[in-house]
Length: 255
Length: 84
Image (cartoon, rainbow over all chains, first blue to last red; front, top):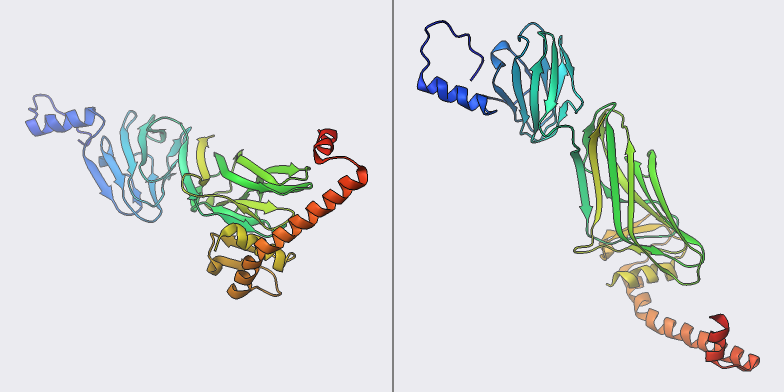
């Protein structure tokens, strides 16, 4: 239940006790929001649950909450919900940009300073991922996008772990290289990581389990990551199929 | 069409062309070069010719190898031993 001011001699009803119990168990009355919202004093002790398909904000202002007040924040919508410091300050070791089904507790240390504690602590948060099970053939020397992540909202100062996996890449003979890379946006974007396999022998072969990993910050805003391939020599095929997927994963791993 | 054969046919027909193909459907062939793009019929014709061309190339290589062994006066096993 929302924060109450009890008075001497007041008799609590069964419904109030049930509500208090629910709040004590970490739940409590829930206010559903379908658009950006500015917290009000009555939100203390409640759950503010955002449900919007597009991006939203929850603004936190000063002089509304007392020291020790808490507000549970949840985002169940597909749109990213960003907890935004209005006139109050909001500090966290996690991210204030909540993907769908992220949430946590806003704790007011003073009337003007809040801490946000993400549920589940500061472990990695899946920002986006993609899989491809269709083989990709490319002519010699053409760097080509092999896998594209869904767009996600990057936050300045956060560290992102990007993983790109290819099950089977071709390796032509006679010193022809096969290159896989992680890039921003497209084949011209910033290159974060590269893996080069070179085959000096006279026999063609395969590179199994190419695995690229990088950790980087990203410019704030809508972001797309791609995995690219480049085969020297002749037109060749990155082999994929059922149970043999190319995978691209982007995780927010903290500050 | 079998993907491996499509790639071989494209390499044979237009070795310097730039292209990409997701899957094994001609409709998904993205042509990045300005020049000639093989038609489905061109590809099918080349694909049909690949086994014959490969057999011919193998026979020519085998004949060349045999002639060299005769010239050196050694057997294939002896040549393999030398290279091991």
